[in-house]
Amino acid sequence: MAVSIFSRKVFDLCLGKPALRSLSVSATVGDALSVLKRLGESYLSLWSCDHDKSSRISDDCRCVGKVCMVDIICFLCKEENLRSPAAALQSSLSVLITKTPTGIVRHLESHASLVEAIDLILEGAQNLVIPIPSQSRRKKLLQKPSSKSTLHNNREYCWLTQEDIIRYLLNSIGLFCPTPINPINTLNVIDPKNILAVQYDDPALAALPLISQSLVNHTSVAIVDLDGKLIGEISPFTLNSCDESVSAAIATLSAGDLMAYIDCGGPPEDLVQLVKDRLEAQNLEAALELMEEESTITSLSLCSSSSDEESGSGRSKSGGSYSARLVRRSEAIVCYPWNSLVAVMIQALAHRVSYVWVVEEDGSLSGIVTFAAMLKVFRERLNSL
Image (tube, rainbow, N blue to C red; front, side, top):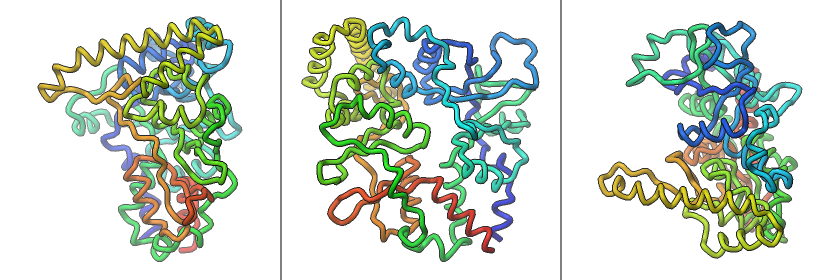
């Protein structure tokens, strides 16, 4: 029975998913920033061709990466870019593409099996691009067809994520018993080594490489105290709801203060002023101007949306946020070594994260459980059937 589940086609997991929004890799960082803000998208797919300008798209046109606000924020945090954000935004998007031997983005045909998708993820692929062959079937599922989505050889595309697969497996979890009800510390699913963490008082800038890595790995950066106890996290998921001016906060605050700054309640005024003072002290006038400009835009946007909120059509916003995308507080999601695998799966899916921190009874951080590690367990379970 489990074998029949894993032989299911990946297209079945993509029904109803929104089509990818695309940009050419030859576009600029500023172009991506503009599209992300205008459309309120969490991610944009980057292609080796330009779907907007090319009347004929060659067969070798491929999705070669994806970009989000976190990529842009991390890029702007570099010292030379903080001194000239305007010039940095004119850089080619190719500077944001992460290159690995296995490829962060992999294409997979819609008739491929679910087990093929899992194998690609276990080989290191972080994002799978799936074509949607039947537009007529798709239009029946959606109230209206997507606009300005990626259309290549008369096919739209969508992301197939680790979350999609884990959610699907959860719906048939009973078929894999007793594995899902076993404690995670008996399944070799806890990773005690690959933990991205900084201490509360460390400069946030020191966490920058870890933030970039956590974005790639679909994890987060843990904030711990001197005793190794988990305090919170700097989550790419949360950062992705902020605007580019948060790069100034990363460049000037401690990791602990940054955690408070990006919280969905909005940055405290004292931290905002602290960032401005430190930017001025470091002669980063251009970054300060960027921060002031975004603050003005946000204030105007909040004022213009107040009437919408009164009529019930307003969109929630947090400090530094530019869209209605789902945001989450900086509180870390944790479990214990004796929790069952299925409990940890449900916990991660409920909070829309791809990982859960593992802590001991005293709160000390001992490891992390990721969706990729869970998929490995299910794949091994399939081999044993």
